[in-house]
Amino acid sequence: MKILLYNPDNGVTRNFMPHLWMFLLQALTPPGHEVLLIDGNAQPMDESQIAQYVRDQNIGLVGIGAMTRMVAKAYRMADAIRAVGVPVVMGGPHVTEMADEALGRDGGPCHADAVALGEADETWPLIVNDAVAGKLKDIYAPVDSAGKEQKPSLKDYPEIPWQTIDLEQFNLVPKAAYPMLKKIGEGWGTFRIIPVESGRGCPYGCEFCTVTGFFGDSIRFRTNESVVNELLLLKKRARSEKGQMAVFFIDDNFAINVKRTKSLLRDIIAAGAQVHWVAQISANLLRDEELCDLIAASGGKWIFIGMESIDPANLKDVNKGFNKPADYSSVLERLAKRNVYAITSFIFGMDNDTTGVAERTLEQVRTWPPGLPIFGLLTPLPATPLYKRLEAAGRITRLKHWQEFIPFSMAHTPLKMTIEEAHAEVNYGWAHCYSAEAIADAVDALDDQPLGYRVNIFLARLCFRGIYFPMLGRFAWLKVIAQNRRTIFKLLKEATVRRKRSRPRDPDLESPYEETPAPEFSSGASA
Ligand code: B12
Ligand code: SF4
Image (cartoon, rainbow, N blue to C red; front, side, top):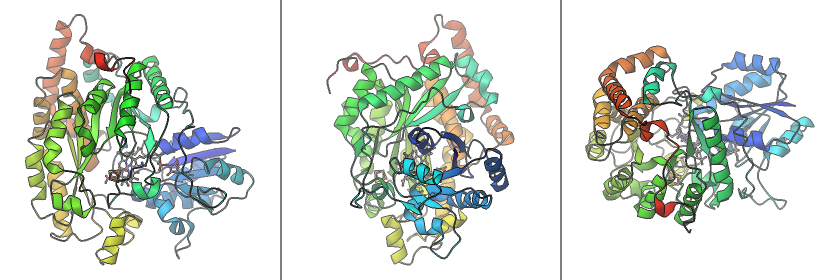
């Protein structure tokens, strides 16, 4: 049977990396089937196009995964596919919480023939077999024979055949950037960010987050060996393509068990499996100097930190009191000392926020090493404790906000400002952090660092700008490039001068994978 796995576009950005679930389910599909993948962010399609594709390709089963914000599009696409007689199974965090909605049991239309609840690693092969037999059930739940919820252990994680997967649609290098990148060094024809998971679960239970409910508070890890092998495979592919490959460790909290994270990072270093990587780690776990040393030595470049707010009262409200705003600066300095920078994520519209919260936050951000600040609004996602609290208090203004998804738009009323004021705060944060002047300041703040770091933060800022200010299409990009021309000329000039001078070539610019591990972390370091 031919199976299509489809992830809808998010309607805002061209996602910077593919979704892991598609590759994982592809690897877990029983033998004898052909699995095609379409990520709508890279290959946009509308309802009629997907219906046509499914017919032309003679697809026998379609699997659709979606976060809450993309679920309306997912339902529309599912309807179009089902209308041409092909069964649809849906999975992922939204339909796990809202299975009745997907199956049309809540009075609305039915969008799916079957729903896979929770982690589908073990149910997916059953779904495929049932589809072949024409006996799809409505619900597939990951339970044992006694009906008890069963989480995959991740100890026998499948090998994802990265060496053969077609990744053409995920090349992030815009053609217009080739001339500049060529000056930086060889091997920049492709740049891809690949999702890799080393573990699942987070016990912290922040009020707005679906993770603790979905993956459970039982934390599970792959073996170090299987993660290291995956990195080696990716590294080999990048080398053979003369391109760049970075890894996003998509674990919810990559250092949730610090001892284990250190042991993984040591094994990565010992095996020479360093690639540039990004991971999400909560600020409280980044006080550990040795962990930060290992992050840097193993290729860690960007750490995503959910700071959420600089106000302890807000953090307490959302059960994230373990974040200590007074520590933020030292955490970021500790990373920056090792040339590791942070994606700092803030949420506005929290209950203790008042107007001016964006500028108050930026006052602090400006005193920190340069990074990638991002701003969002508190959003009640289905089945989270936040949703339940706000619903009980009658504060949700759009109960099923996902049915008509509006980017950066609140679905409840904050306590100390209006919805419009909260929107204005988010706009202020993005506008002031991603103006051409702010980007130039961030680049200049790294003047004492090798050119590669400045190019890196420049390109990263341009890409992150697109999260809020859509940059879909050539014209939008040209406009941004024109606005930032001074910084671009400055970097190009420096690159040209350095390239002429540097014989042999500057290793910072030429071989991003040749990290030299700090001696204390090289092969043989103990766990
Ligand atoms: C990586 C990640 C991102 C990446 C991008 C996504 C990508 N390209 O991979 C980035 C950083 C960009 C991102 C951004 C956002 N994210 Co995010 N992200 C994640 C994260 C950490 C990992 C996703 C992942 O790969 N997990 C591992 C895979 C294996 O798990 P999975 O996707 O759930 O798939 C399993 C099952 O769900 C199921 N399954 C999934 N799909 C399907 C489909 C079928 C057919 C079947 C049978 C089964 C199935 O099987 C899989 C194997 O068990 C998750 C948290 C998490 N741990 O999952 C949050 C998460 C998905 N993100 C979330 C959110 C809210 C966001 C943002 C909206 C945050 C924000 N406020 O801006 C943005 C929106 C992104 C956008 N523009 O669309 C929420 C979604 C909750 C929800 N109800 O929708 C999550 C769950 C985290 C949370 N805090 O609650 N995210
Ligand atoms: S620390 Fe992060 S992943 Fe864990 S519950 Fe809080 S927001 Fe979710």
